[in-house]
Length: 98
Length: 371
Image (cartoon, rainbow over all chains, first blue to last red; front, side):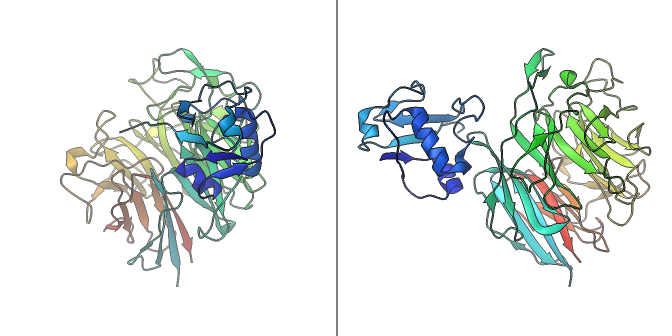
């Protein structure tokens, strides 16, 4: 299971607490994780990536394993530690403002 | 006993304020959608406990929420606002062309007859409609066909902020867009045309009398006389007596004719309200005095309403969707400020009281009257 941690406002929108656990078929890519997330929580559609272009929203970032994966190729496999659930995949609202 | 429900959208959530018909004691809800920008909430006239809210975020985009129990509980409905076909371009601030991009919903206007039909005014300017209670939205693209390529954004964005449904002719709708002007359809949204003759904008557009490009801040009508429209433009307060075919200025003796909201008394169609703001460069009341101005003659002659409003050191703004009236007698008038106050008058504006003082900046105020 892949562990996903949503930012506060998306947790309240999806009505979840703590991490979300997702079943994702191998290879676990960025797109596969987001597909699974949006399937489980349809209210999140459009909040993380545009539903037409499938581009990440500009003020959303992806962190994991102490790395910024915001620009990770969407169809490339994520690190094994994420795929195995050893490390959470963090969806972050970018720091903006004071 | 009659009841009043005030719906306040703010920079950091929605608040619902309730009172009985005396309008003296108010209950203020906890924030709904805390931390999100709530540009607008409005109840369905056909089913007053059905409310819609536009929930937006610079981070996470647009959501539409619906309540079927007067705001006690909410459920997200559809928020997929796609422009019809290839969106094309509009004029940018510097006169170049810029792609149409959906940013947010500024205003929601429920049908008076059908609780499942709602119109949504968007930035970048477009009109969307749902007929299934908000689950799916379709653009009415004929509007952007009315010279959309030369519309341009105002300072607040290129927003469709006002939707007026003609109560006597369901096929007629007025919308207002910053900075494009007023547009009217007479065939339920299929085709549209600009109705801006008489507006003059010498400092905003190269041709002051242009057919489109005027920065209209708000329009309002009284349901008993839908051919009479009142407008707060960027500068100038205007009036039309022929459903927008022609406009004339009614600023009269106002201390400033710049401002954002305008509204009409519920029981007196010639009584109107504005909140003058010093200028487009200084968005606060003249002389630090928060004054609502009322005209009982449909314009030209205005009186300052100050009783209960701060008359020194006040530098808030009142945004375009942040004024509303109830339909009791005497009429209640309400407005919210960027300082987080919501002021109410239960005597048509003669006296005012803050019904809440310390909300986040208020973006919109709507009122529901339960007789």
